[in-house]
Length: 388
Image 1 (tube, rainbow, N blue to C red):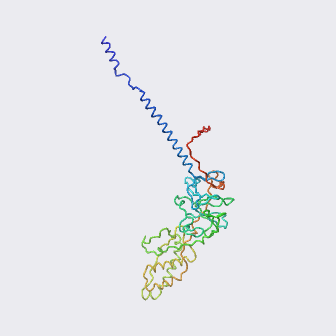
Image 2: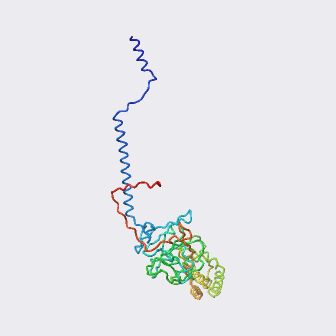
Image 3: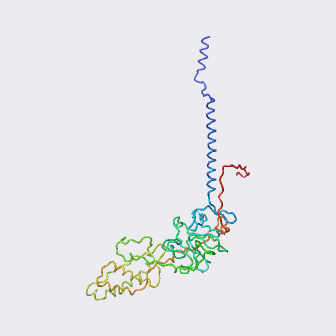
């Protein structure tokens, strides 16, 4: 009998027995607490995030038109406390450009004006390819550092945007952008401009000609070439006018040779050996956004300035007054003009209907949407059958 019991015990302890563990009440309790706690925590996080979103939304300022259509969230305000919104132009993929549009009670506004060859701001609109301090730093009253200088378009490398008159009514205005096409008229033909930033009753169309602006003088510090590369440092904020000078090198060289022949034919050169040395034309510079103004006296003005630089940098002794007397007879001035840099403007199409302007159909008066109040009361809404 004892041998039979030992055989049974040995069979129970055989290597083929089944392994496992015992689920206790404590393990079930701990697991339930962890799962329920996680669900409660996730729900609390969800509620906190939703309340934060609702609170943030209640503080947002949104501009609406007269029909309650939202124009956009307020990005900032201009110097007149008019709210401005960011418009994303997606009509030229893959580039997405942004334009800042000011919203007033009855119109849209922008920093950049539009220019016209008519006196009533009608016809083909044009705008400047890039604004800068040198040519756009004067406002409509002539005050310095108050004009339509805008860096947004230059920084994002996209087209320039401006608000112009709408159709058929002038207000509240349409959105236009610059194109690579050249303006069909020159700066001398400008008769009016639509400067939407102007605070005025009625339409902001004013009579305007570029002659009203002062033309800055050209910088001639590098006009006399020394033959040494990079010896003359160009002034900051200027652009070389080599493309224009190249067209006048022939007449300038001929007049330089004639002037040298006149001065060096005097006894001071033949008897005393005091002669004017050979000169070589370098380059001159104009402020960014302007170009060298071409007129009938450009050649003589270049030669006079060339010899003025020679007299200022070279000791000519007795011949210096004689050279000055000869060059003083050469007329003309070297000025930079803001007449260049205009490009044709086109209407920005609407995302909904490309045949309409982006701002067409928005009715004044415009107003700010009153912010809602965020509370702690939950309103449960049943699904509408469309998956919402």
